Image 1 (cartoon, rainbow, N blue to C red):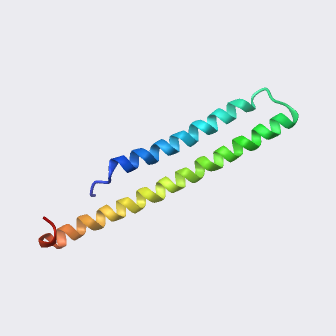
Image 2 (image 1 turned 180 degrees about the vertical axis):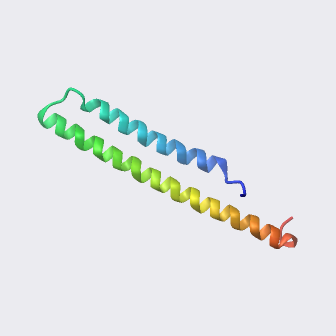
Length: 85
């Protein structure tokens, strides 16, 4: 498998980690709350979790795309070496 740009992977992982940290922080805020405060905090935690899930899906799709592109380039380089220096 060809190499994938590590800076892009690092950035994507950082975004996923940031979303996870936001979610875990909002989960901790739920503790000890009651009534409407609890409802609002739970709604915030749910939104943060949804953002985390979405970020994970975007990251996974980007990794799959980059891996496919890298594999195609590697294949093309082997098949047509005269086009690549």
